[in-house]
Length: 191
Image (cartoon, rainbow, N blue to C red; front, top):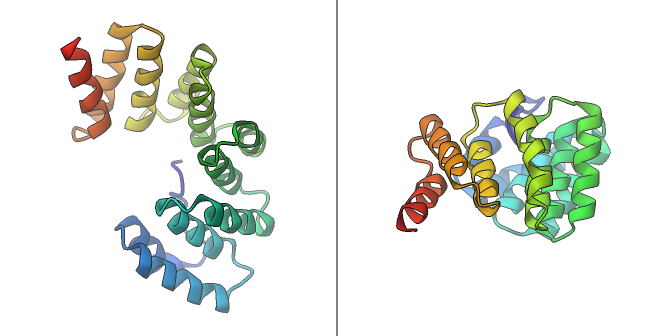
């Protein structure tokens, strides 16, 4: 399961999620704000508002909304994962890791939490510790280009360039237009 790929419990919320996925952030924000007035106890409304704020890089507001979703549905690993994601973006690695641990306690197969936990370790320079988490995420969901890419970057930082190239190429097999892996391969070709 990818970040935020779970459909909302109320199909009437899909237009807001579709607007968000299409990059129409203001339309999505207005939709979810109106929905929040009608359904203040619906976690998926607050998740939608959090997605919009996060996409707009308003991480403090995103944390507020993701936390509201979490309070309404604390058993959902995605909400814990979203809180971890935004805590990472706010520069709070320990809080992010704690949230990812709870997400994985609720669902050990929640691959996004493994990938994002690895990203936090990478951010703080703990590259070797990140690798097993990327591997675990790939073992659960090997069809996500982003995980292959992230592992490739980590391997590059460890100086394991041939392995890194393999993971960037794997990302491109899954998503031929994956810009970040294309950029990494171009960078490596210049060295």
